[in-house]
Image 1 (cartoon, rainbow, N blue to C red):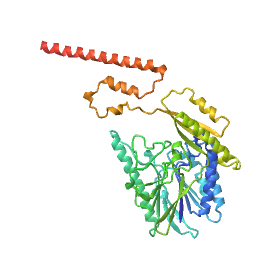
Image 2: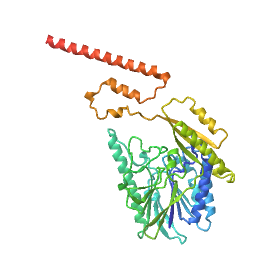
Image 3: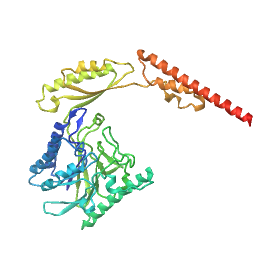
Image 4: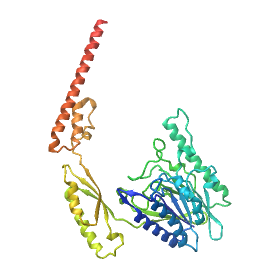
Length: 434
């Protein structure tokens, strides 16, 4: 038995004003072919089908088309599709087509249900025999599984939410084990942050102000745990059976540093056999460029030459012949008022589309960090203030601003000193009167 584990599609996302529709369409087509070629039994989507609660109509259309086309592609063998709501998803939106999609061998789980048995989905083979159970648990909203009481501290709420998630998971898994006449594989899902996982810029906090991360040791004893929410594929707690599949496309530029993938967990009759990591092709060229302005200009020119050469030999319609999205981080201490224009002049009439230009300023040695080994008794307030100002870059036209800020701070210190002197003298006078 094979289960294809994927998550965090974020259909309908607009990335810095750019639609990801074409990328998602290509990914879903690729995923259907992979499922058919690998003869998987289940596709498990562990949350965040959509990017927002009210996705655009084209995103809903992509989702519905995927369900229909999946079953059309595998007419000889029905593939069960299990869709779980994530923190980005609206339960109401996913529930709109839930009943209809059930006719296409698709189970949609959007929230914690009163009957834990409704979260247990049997996986049957062509003979109708049960080969495994999936404990399909979506993103668990605190209001659905826990309650708060007056006077609770932040720590109390955090502990209560943690124990509520643990109890809910254990109840669903226990129900699955009771349904199993023999020791069949049990797969648990979850959409949450687990302790030790590595996030990216595009990952949104789930339990704001309460539960930061879930300890892996608190998961029930099962054969495979299919996780969603974190966009970087990774193994958790050095346990090969606890996995994040990650998002199939980069949802921020910092996600370019690792390969996107989906997972195929293969089971024998009683346990997990192996987990195959299947790389997802790139459906949109994206590059992140860093350096000083001269290095940036050089790298842009090289990209133009390389891309132009590749485009001459690649048929139109493939991603190599399309636009490259660029993120630029310029490392400089100079004030570059013409930075935007310089970049635009290089990429004009080229396939390069610069989505972001950021400027970082390298710290000088004379920073607050150099004061770490000094005690507070050795420091004066004006010294700390001046060191903080030194962390900023001051172009010639702003030198006067820096000088005025220093003078104002000195005046404040002087006024504070006068007040303290007056208070000290008043205390001495009152003491003498006593």
